[in-house]
Image (tube, rainbow, N blue to C red; front, side, top):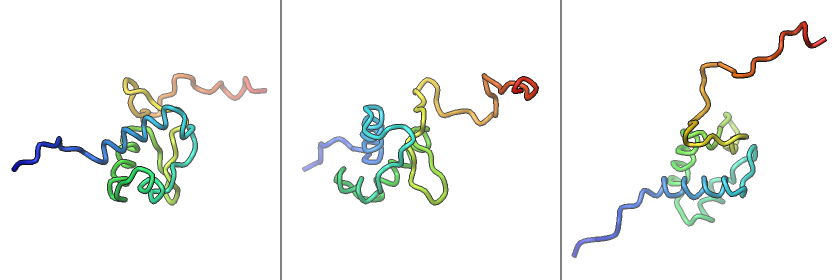
Length: 102
C-alpha cells in the first residue's frame, strides 16, 4: 500500500499561517512574536518546525530579530513586490541640511 497524501512542508505552512495572522492584525507591527513554546502549542507543532518557520519569516522580511530578544513583527511589512528593505543605505527622503533646522 502506498501513501497518497501530499508532501507537506510544515515550516512553510506555519510561516504562511503566521504571515496571514500578522497581515490580519493579530500581531500588530512592532510587537514581539509569542514564545516558541506557545506557538508550538497553539499551532500543534514541534519546536523545530516553529524555529524554521520563524527563520523563513525573518528571511522574507516579515519579522526582524535582535540578539537576545524575541523576533518582532516588522514595523512596516514589505509587500512581495518590494521584498526586504535594501541595505544600500539609500534613502529616498534624505534629512534636511542642519542649517535649515534652526
